[in-house]
Length: 152
Image (cartoon, rainbow, N blue to C red; front, side):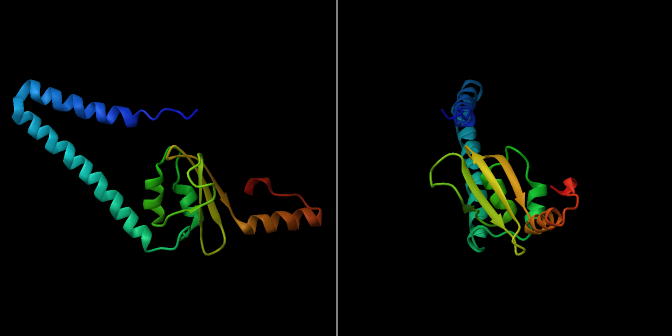
């Protein structure tokens, strides 16, 4: 069972409450002002989403300038839209389309990549892969020397 997203319920209920309170205290003029404010809020969010997607449309899917910098900026519970705005590119979908959790990958020019897992549109987990670390680790193990655990 998927966890309930309270924002899908609370935001519309809050809008109705604002309109009812506006009517209660200011009559129909209050309803007009509250409805105008709600429509403005919706339009601001829609405009931001369109701007982010327009920027992302001009870049290759799954490409980011620096996977290490992206990994440093990621925080739990970030929305997918926020991550797309940071990377300015859509992530390459790694999971089956329409299934939860959604897994996206962003790769930089040095073949490093960040794999992000989103549950319900929120970042649940992210992992950085750097090919140089894997080569160094394999070389150290083959030589029989100690493996530096600080970099793993």
